[in-house]
Image (cartoon, rainbow, N blue to C red; front, side):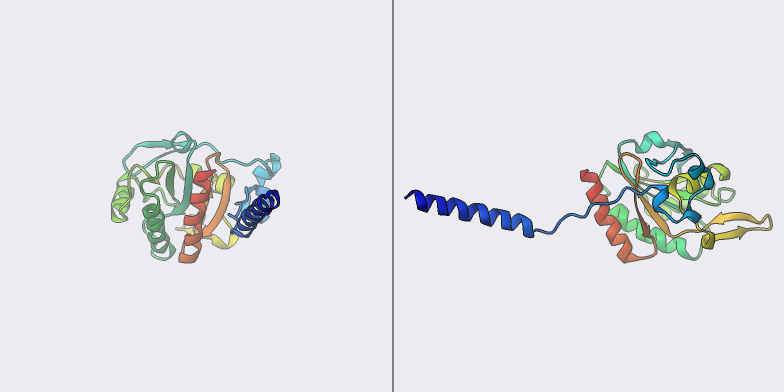
Length: 220
């Protein structure tokens, strides 16, 4: 009788171990630091200050489409996706924000998730223009923020916190010849303000991965 009980227990334990070993593993998202990126994407000042590791999104303060001030306190303890765009863009931005609408729909009722869309052309994209754009994209004001402010502050955050500027993506804006960020990157940031992934905002497949990875970070 004891042998029968032993074999039953042994078989049960064996089946249980086999089951868990054969289940698909949830992928671990990397924590991305400046040293993990191509050097051309990182502002030299960041590396000079020896901030290659332990990187977190820096402080910021911008106005959203309702004229409300949005700072790092608004995303404290939350997962969020950031992008850079401009309202008059007729190339990649409409595609990107159509994809961002998919992201919003997937997490519309998730209080621990937000979207930050920073303009790269604040001289045109004031609060009223951003409001019009937000309405046209069905943005939930409590979750999806279209942010505007001083150009130097917007660009500094892009270069020193999100690392979205590549030389190939720099263009000239107007006759002034000033650099102009024009990137298709969506940046995924976790509850600790650490970068966890870059995604092609013009690719439905890449955005599918983003939607999946947001779920993973919400559980962390």
